[in-house]
Every structure is written in structure tokens, then in C-alpha cells.
Length: 353
Image (tube, rainbow, N blue to C red):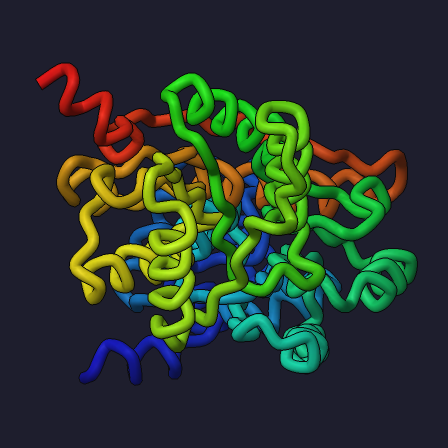
């Protein structure tokens, strides 16, 4: 008989009958309550469960315990490697602690975000982790006020202290990167980003850029902020050509707001037959695996997205099990600057070579 069919037909009554105990004893065993159960009985039950390939119904157990054992996780863009590591971190922690995770990808669309949350709530969620678009703050705050534990992962609310949040430290790490580029001898640093909108991570990194340009270079960074279209590299190619034509004698470093923007930049440079470090210095937030493989290596700010997912899940389970009251926790995970050859100015490279 097919194991899946066999498992579906096996009931707790059958397990109890084959083990020679009551269904109450089986229920206690499944819930880890061994206080009044002998080792012999536990071993017998385990043997029967294995022989019958029995798995308890999560739905039936949730009806009795009034708990579903399910948490939701909303991801803004699952195609982004950063997001996939958040997902892995969340899933690893929840699975280890006996929780099922229901995931939904919103493609960075606020309307899809609300629809996804409503759909997941139909599964009697015990809590929710949100990598938000940044446009539904009031909706999330209202859900939390109704008693649903919510933890923000990576992206935070406009008022970051209203909900539990685990994120990367964005401002200081970005500012320090511009200090590094200044010390490298770059005449200008330009900021390439996708649409910032209400994306808190992009906004904070751009704020650090504006402040750094004013303090380090004495210029208005808004004049050197370029908005990319991730679906059209021609936009980026035009920016690159304009920079080369406008500042032919300057050493210019490009800072990419994240790995998606970096990909757009590198594709555009290749199409324009421009060389990394020679035509433009290049650095980026996000240390994706391939950044060390592209010659001469891309300087990055490496953030630990897996750890973000782990900590978000741990905090959510704590809220579920200990209560959703009390002061909300806002925690930043420090990234690190990984220096590679893409940020050695060409004239300096030649003088040393």
C-alpha cells in the first residue's frame, strides 16, 4: 500500500488500539507529556507509530488546543537572494520548534501584501513575520493591536519602534563606506538605487549618502542620485555614459543600494564595454556569492540575512509563547565592509603597478 494513503487512513484510535493504551495516552505522548508514562509504554507507542507510519493531523490538534502551530511569513521579493536567506532562517527556527511556516511573496506590491496577509490569516496564524513593502504600516499596527504577534524582518515601519523589528544596521555602515571611498582617493561618489519609495533600508542608506556627501565632499548628494529601472538597463547605460562625458578626468565610484541594483550596473557596464575600477569604482550593499568571483572582486557591505530570519523567528515565537504585551524590540544586526579590487582607483592601481 502507498505510504501516503496508509498514513492518511491511520487514526489515533488505531494507534491506541495497536499499542493497547487509551487515546488520551497517545495524545499525551504526541504532545511530549511523559510524566505519568513508563519508558516501556513510550517505546511501545513509538514502535506502533513507526509501523503504521502515523502522523497526527495538525488541524485536529489545533482544534483541541486552540492553536494552529502555524506562522505566516510575508516576503516582498522572493527572487532577491537576500530574501531567500531570510526565508531559510525563519523556516529553520520554526521547524525546529514545531511550527509550520506559510510563506507568501508580494512582488513589492502593497495591494498584494494585504491580500496575502488576509489569505494567510484564514489559516489561524499564531504570528506573522513581515518583510514589508513599506505602505501598509497602519494595517500591520492594527493587526498587532488586535493581538496578533508581528515581527518586521529587515524593513521597518516609519516609526520603527511600534512593532518588533529585526534589521540590518544601515546608516553607520553606509556612511563608513563613503569614508573608505574618500580615503581611497575618489573625486566623486554617486548613488545608484532602485525606486526608494517607502523602502526603509533604501531610504536610510540614501540618507547616509546625502549626509556623507555634505560632510566629506561638500556637495548635495541629491544631484548625484540615480534611479534605476531593474527591467531596463538602458536607463543605467545612459547614466554611465553621461557621467563619463561630464567628468572625464575624475575618479568616480558608484555605490549600489543593493545587489539588484549592482547587477543592473554590471550588466550596463559590460554592454558599454566599461571596465570595473578602470572606468568606475564599484561597491554595493549585499555580498552575494558571485561578487568575489567577478574580476577584480566587488567591494561590498555584507549583511547577514540568514541571521535576520533566525532572530525574527526567535522573537516571534517568544511573543507567541510568552505574550504579545510589553515594549517592542528594535534590533540591528551589524554588517561588515568586505574590501576587494573594485574600489582601488585606476590611477592608484597604475602608480603601484
